[in-house]
Image 1 (cartoon, rainbow, N blue to C red):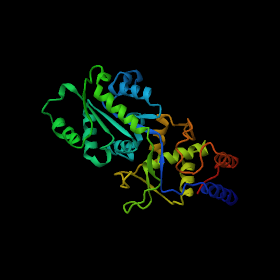
Image 2: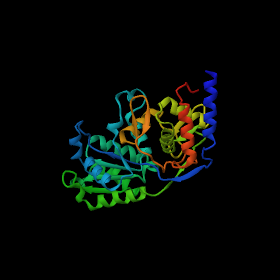
Image 3: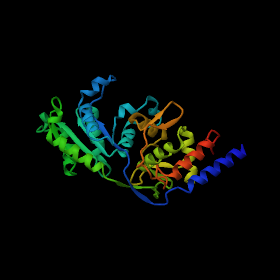
Length: 313
């Protein structure tokens, strides 16, 4: 066992040579669009005719780089033992580059209130879509969260939610503008360390790093992934924090992230091992070699020659 652990140490040291030394990088990372609205039936064909399904199809046809996030597709029953649904949706909102909320149910109205209350975090991501028949109503929604959203310059669109949704020029204009913004490279902090959370890793950055690590080590278990990640960064433990360095109300577990990546199609899993569905060569943030370089291919070959089948510390 000792010799195997020593061999693992050697491989980790070889990989550590290629770790990026930069504090931040401009990268083009996977873009997530969080769609909120009326709950969907389990039958896929019912989703396609909903407002979320219609805008989902529009986005997929225009932007191959964007991944649609639906809370109910990612949430699993046993998550309720470790996290509440509001914090879970806050986690999804944090990793998303755009959040489109169709205010068409009690649940989506609650989401509207939750997101507008956290104005500094989601202000630049939100697009709110309400039914045009209620535009001039003296309602709590219009006088409360919608009025606050307007004061924060969050786009508020009134459209025919029971008719031809895509006939709303205002909605299409806002969605297209969001897609253009997403095509730009954005700065990502390689590590967020704050007085609040000493070993806090930015959630958005961690997702890019973990995709990169899966591509290098695949097929790999979640335990191997986290073990290698911690050893590469000399971390005994770490927690995932928001982009501004603040903590989530409840702990964000790695399995939430992996489930997200599997559901949107970036990663695939057979139940034990994870591998990449596609090579995202732009997610080069953890290491400083490109994914087409000889050094990257040589590092992967050496790792596969001595797979991490033994227990990692």
